[in-house]
Length: 122
Image 1 (tube, rainbow, N blue to C red):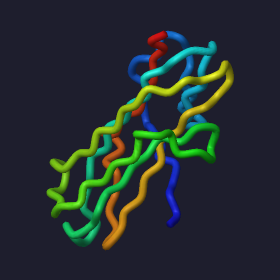
Image 2 (tube, one colour; image 1 turned 90 degrees about the vertical axis):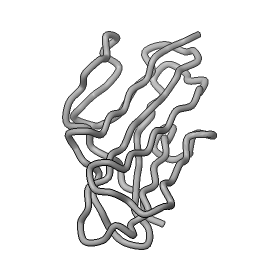
Image 3 (cartoon, rainbow, N blue to C red; image 1 turned 135 degrees about the vertical axis):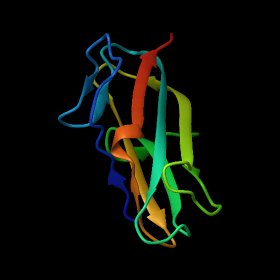
């Protein structure tokens, strides 16, 4: 199943300069344990039967354990949301990206309400 890296329009809180809005990647500035999180908001295309999925991916290839989620009930445009969060050990330079897709029908991730962030916690 094809998953797409989700573009984030604005960086709101990255005091370590670890997020690059041009590449939509969070890059660990130092080795440690990080909390990586995202919120996705559904926007209808043609059907509320779409099933929104999201996950966080390490270095572009590996799904981060505990980060996959799906909303499997009927969606309501601009009201159905999915929140993802997990803790992950990262080496300096490791990247985390947000990926998503829809199954059963297509839809959109509401760009102005979709967020992605990371923070070193240990």
